[in-house]
Image (cartoon, rainbow, N blue to C red):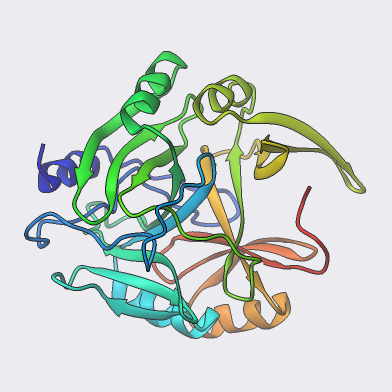
Length: 300
């Protein structure tokens, strides 16, 4: 299977997800390239190569956008990200926070003019993409496309968990990015938001070795986390809102939530929901992303 066919198959599976808090749109498509990329290749997720892997962790985030230029302007001014067009293609850009490579932006042609179809898609590091894809099928999920080897990036597969949340499985060809304490503009956290969290325990336990643990906190007695090797990996949020389907939502650390929310509106984005020091915003193309003012240590 070539990369163009891989991408085309994903676009045909488009599924708009709209939340009652506003147009919260996600589509199950893979940003792993486009027809303009010749030959099929993508920039690596680690620069320079590390040769080390963080299996079970989220190591990369890509934005598939209807209007990548608008997205580049928005995120560049909102978070101070440096966004540069990748070599050998005009349809994929890489995102830097300072000198740190943290993600990418790819073009998606909107086939439904009635709704936004932009999406942030998380990549989960796995030891063996083919074996993990088999586990997905055995555990009640679906492999939408792949596994596929993409030059420069590695081996990948787009899956959907039993709750319907899309996720990219990745075995990077150069190793995963070296972890560091998140600074302003870095990725801070990832939540699985789902109307029904019941299948998550077994599925992600089998896929990623996660254990689901409850975290009691004031005003939020039902919080749960995914952990592996004694470390928190992601959150599990059961949200029963009409129209909100399961999805993985990444968060960016910010110095001042109020300041970022003001600039979000000035730059053409909007607030979807806020709770204390955390908010979910929509960029001008409709993609949802979380922001958090880190006033204390992350969830443990």
